[in-house]
Image 1 (tube, helix red, strand yellow):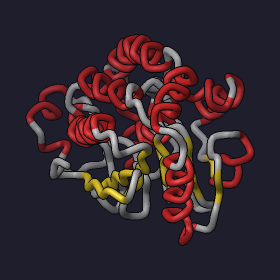
Image 2 (spheres, one colour):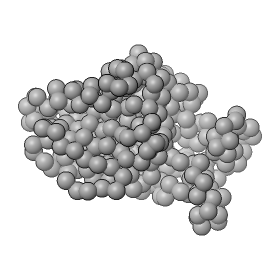
Image 3 (cartoon, one colour):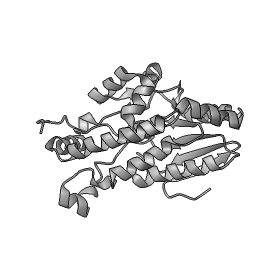
Image 4 (cartoon, one colour):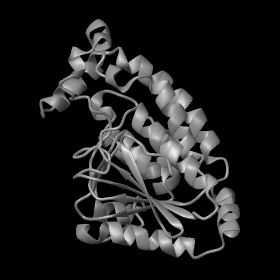
Length: 268
């Protein structure tokens, strides 16, 4: 397997373990998402591998975009545009990489030990199954930032937990704990935090005991055109995010989040 900058890949029998290594919060950017997509392509190309565990070091699974990066305001792009999202790079290119993750051919189990926020929630939802713990927090916090959901969540989240539950998460930006996530279908297994990684590996190994050809065939049927629908959704999401990035509300939402206070939105 290739050696990556922000992730490590371990082979254990017929499963691969991808570990995000940007602790403590594992903030995402285009490079991280691209590396995960590249690793999944390698796993798909290896006939000995049948399932993947997607895990992370640190206190968070993936806390989304780092709008609070103290170096962000030092960048030329941010200084010129005043756009808090400039440190992400091209969001359009990021979503191209996200769609690659949704196109992975083999089952993925996400081990969500902490926060899965914003795009980090999108990464967790791209997996087939989520093993979590009571301490985890899932949030689609886009509207609290004055933003529009992305990473294909407008398609993938309602398909997973139902339209109304997805609306509840989108409209309130609330954080959902691991036990509530299990009740609403956002997680499949909830165990004590210390047992989480082992439980995710155990589920992946159970999957890997099955016929590899049967797995590929059945998963392709069950996923259907999800990746194509996510690709279409990200086109719309990107257009709305681009429009909202220029608003005063977005800048206020990011600033309020950095300062840990309620935002004073003006609707402009």
